[in-house]
Image (cartoon, rainbow, N blue to C red; front, side):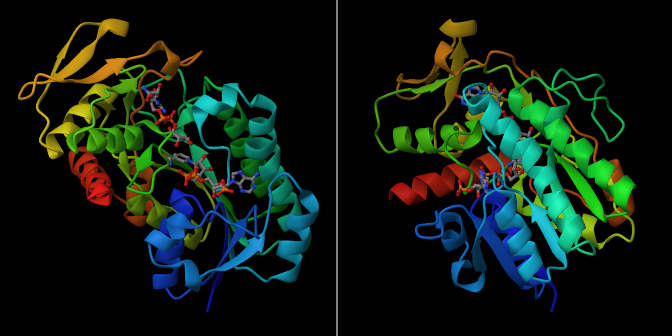
Length: 337
Ligand code: NAP
Ligand code: G4F
């Protein structure tokens, strides 16, 4: 039986990856920051909480990383832990740099010292492309990060490549475009949209407030992406791979898709901060724009090219963006019933 360790096991991807690896017959371990009262709702929702082994683990502290890896003979280590909300990285820039950047060096250094044969996955991100240098983005596209989060992730990406090349470690980086699910945190735009529209569809009167509706993202389903993480670690040679759908969608269109799944027929009007969406049937204002949710520097448009992952190990997405919006909106609506 293979043994895997997942940092960030309590997050969206950690829960889906736990379920995936358990179904593959793995013994699954994971790191939690607060062992006395871990936030386990994602693991509970997927019905896997009782099947995983939880260890105290914080990316900010080297000694507990050495202890965790020194005491346990893991075959695979997936680093999914991060301060993952881009918007918060301007408010907590040094913390984001420490956890998302130096934290990865702490893991690599501990693995190199006490568990050098373990295969390692780093959660890299399309945020590294930032102000994009070509369209679509692939493994060769230059990085131009636009947030403290993105800058830290570029460091993490290159230190992973460097340890692979310096110490012959099996360390791979998945450059993943946005992937969402009903387990997504409500601070991220997709889940904010589906949870708020569900509230409105249930009779709520306050409109949904959003920032930049013109931003475009390549949205996929998290369940598809965790399979790609695992596939990367099954390759004989470690490497870097993009996982994406190849389709870009504006935030405005995601709202329209999610609204439609809940019976809201949205009509958009206005521009910039005066833009709004009204339900054609009720005449109610459903969406308004608030400057509060604009970022100091924006990533305008991302769209990925996953050809390398497809050619190397046959990865492709199975859920398109409309189906994803519907899945998330209905899950939020049902949760209110
Ligand atoms: P998420 O739901 O926000 O989960 C983040 C996890 O990291 C949580 O389990 C959190 O634990 C943990 N964590 C935060 N700070 C930590 C620290 N100092 N030490 C140890 N654990 C810590 O994120 P996700 O969407 O699953 O994303 C997983 C990874 O992929 C992240 O690295 C993210 O940056 C990256 N990524 C995500 C996407 C996407 O679209 N989802 C795309 C590209 C890359 P708590 O429960 O204690 O908060
Ligand atoms: O949902 P978001 O916060 O995700 P973002 O910034 O793309 O980051 C996510 O995906 C990355 C992969 O590219 C991951 F690395 C990262 O960890 C995270 O999972 O924002 C998406 C877009 C942005 O352009 C933002 O400006 O939506 C725009 N937006 C418009 N109104 C909003 C809002 N974002 C949020 N969170 N809240 C709003 O009200």
